Structures are given as C-alpha cells and as structure tokens.
Image (cartoon, rainbow, N blue to C red; front, side):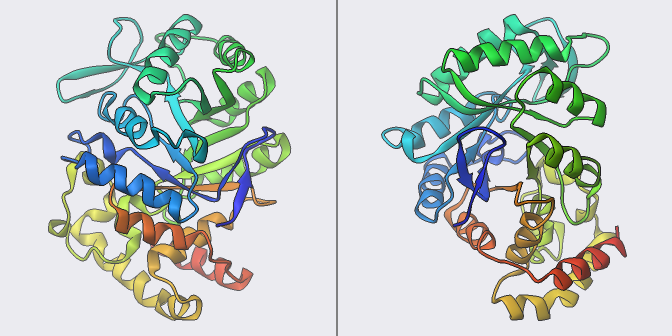
Length: 328
C-alpha cells in the first residue's frame, strides 16, 4: 500500500489507517469480539495497513487494551495512534457526554495529560506512542490555553514518550493556535463525501503548515458502502443512530448514488466503499490526507485496504463530489 509522511515528523504510515473505535464494544457500537478484533488488526498489517488508531474513551479503555494485546511482539510493525483529554476518572473538566452511566469530561490541562499518557501506555503495553492526539479541544467552562496543552505534549515528545503531536475536532482558530504553539503534525477530523466541511476549511491551512489531514468516518459509519438498504440489516448502536443517512427516507438517496457510481466501480474494479476511500485519499494537496477506516472484522479490513490502492482520474473525482453535493 502507498504510504504517507505524517506532517513534519519522521513517521511514514499507510495512506489508509484502521480505526479501533468499534473495538471498544460499548453502547456506541454494541458488543465486540476481542479475538476477532485482534485478528482484524493482524490482517490489517498483512495487507499493508500500518496505522492503528485508538483512544481511551473507546469502550472506556477497552479498545486500548485490545490493541495492546494485538501489538504484543509486533509493536515495531505498526504506527500507533491514541488520544488524550477525555477523562471519566477525574472530577474536574467540561462535560462532553454521558455514556453507559458514566460522565466523560474534557480536561486538557498539562498535569492531566502527563498523568493520562502513563495510563494509556500501560493499557497499550508499550513505552511510546507514535502519534498522540488531543481528542477534543477545551470548552469555555473549563479553559486550558492551547499553548499550555502543546507545551505538555512537546515535553512528552522530548522525553521520547511520543513521536508526533496531533489534535482533533478543531475550529479554524484552534488549528492556528496549535500550529503556532509547537510542531503540530496531524489533525483528525470528520470528513466524507457527504460531510465535506472540515476539509473545505482546513485542507489549505494543513498544506501551508505541513500538517497531515486525517479523515475519520469517510464511509459515514458504513452507509457509503452502498450495501445497507435498511437499518435493520446491521447492529446500529448509538453511533450509527446519530447519522442521518441511516434514516429510512435517506436510504433511497444512497441507493441512487450507488447506481450512479456503478460504472466507476466497474472501471476501477472496486466496490463502492473502496471507490469512496480512494476519493477521500485524493483530497487535499500534495498527498497529505490519511484515511481512517473503522473496522473490527478481518473482512472489513480487507475491503478497506484495497481502497488505498485506487488512484482516480481527476474527472471522476470531480463528478463524485458533484453527485454527493446534489443529495447532501
């Protein structure tokens, strides 16, 4: 698989990464099979996917634990990404959500980040993290200057605990604050053919500041595979229930897209999901977009991986965007 340089760091990662949110196995996604998840992580590496992304909040630590077991004895084969700033084990912070009876708070203060990384390292059974990402930025009711957060992350980098710094779910102003406060190498943002706003805002700044744009939910949690005709076909969980495209009245629009893109799938010898992954990887400028595809089964990894090998013609890239704009 093609690789991509992560920002200005020395890290090279596969253009398609594996997201481990669903592996957490909470009410967001429903029960997950840990053994199957580990097989999926190993299968990903077999197919050239080197980047594995997780976070403490995914299953309240469970995703990190499963990833740690999968990487045992193979740590050097993977680019490992995890996050900080969402806590359920502290009392101070801004309320982000309540899940499964647990209050999850945003806390990006330096002392908490320094504490949190040690917890993640233990779960992941490693002594370093390749890309450490601030999961959500601070909120006004519990302010932490971004310069202070970046200072803590930079010190972790100097100590060899992390190799690159990332941030996620940023406004334009927050991006600039991070970029000015230190070496920001990656941002992780929700981006898909059906939700293009973050890319339209941040592709340009990323190119100017040498930051990799990592797109999460490029398949809109599976709806852009084109295979879901009815929500009852899959275990929804609250993660998919929040996506408007799973609503019955919108399924016909996705089916129409699948019909429009069938000739392109034939042209490139791919599935609709692979076509969409190829389109997403082609965005931005200078090959600085990484595509993060969630998976917890080997067959899902196998399909996603092939999307990283597809190089679309410029006319087809433009036509696909036009088709998506017509329904979104």
